[in-house]
Amino acid sequence: MADDELGAARWKRVVLKLSGQAFSPSGGSGADGASIDGDVVSQLATEIVDARRNLGVDVAVVVGGGNIWRGMTGAGAGMDRAQSDYMGMLATVINALALQDALERLDQPTRVQTAIQMAQVAEPYIRRRAMRHLERGRVVILAGGLGNPFFTTDTPAALRAAEIDADAILKGTHSGIDGVYSADPRSDPAAVKLDELSYMDVLNRGLKVMDPTSITFCMDHALPIVVFDVLHHGNIRRVLVGRERIGTLVR
Ligand code: UDP
Image 1 (cartoon, rainbow, N blue to C red):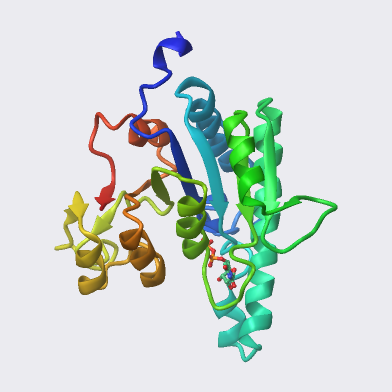
Image 2 (spheres, rainbow, N blue to C red):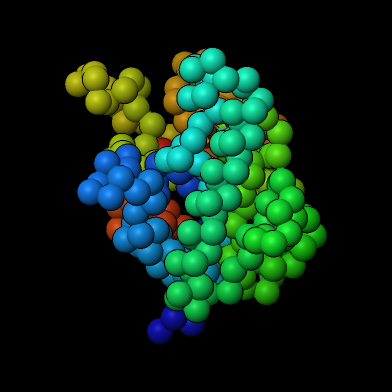
């Protein structure tokens, strides 16, 4: 059965950007206050394994850290911005290890590569090695952002996608918002969902898709972006197969 599905996806290789909040949709407000929800991480892992095994798609995951720490949080409270950003980069590694654990419990070979070296827990990011892992059917989790402060993990999602020859970026949202809207649908009832946009639309209208730096980068490298609700069951597969219109396509 699964063999019939191989090649059914519209892209051979993708970067899946998971924001930290996707690891804890309730914002860590559960009884134990945990910032990583094991059930959610397992669900994400199951869907990544489905994409890898059944659709034959190479998946590199760029993980955020916002469920644990964002640089701006500390900077807003008077911390040195760069120091606070390094804390954020380390937070992404925690999420990466949680996702690796969930994938490996499904017997999915996985490698974590980090932009800040920490040899005891992960490989350093090495482009050729990452590509080799993908060719061998491993899921590669890229953590630590770019390894430089003053960025968010949107920029490494775009940069790594170009580096590893990915065909598209799948930008997962997590708060029940299933794409890009003309305004914030949580506060503006007149907001309408936009099915397709150009990079310039996103930049000119200041739409919240990814950081402007990463949008510009994707435009320069003709990398399509699909913004979609990654926590809706089966959506990763739906986006990859592309028969249904899911989320918002930016190209
Ligand atoms: N960060 C950074 N450089 C990078 C990527 C991330 O300094 O290249 C820091 C930054 O402080 C950021 C934090 O790591 O706020 C967590 O990443 P992000 O905010 O992108 O997480 P997400 O919103 O996706 O959960």
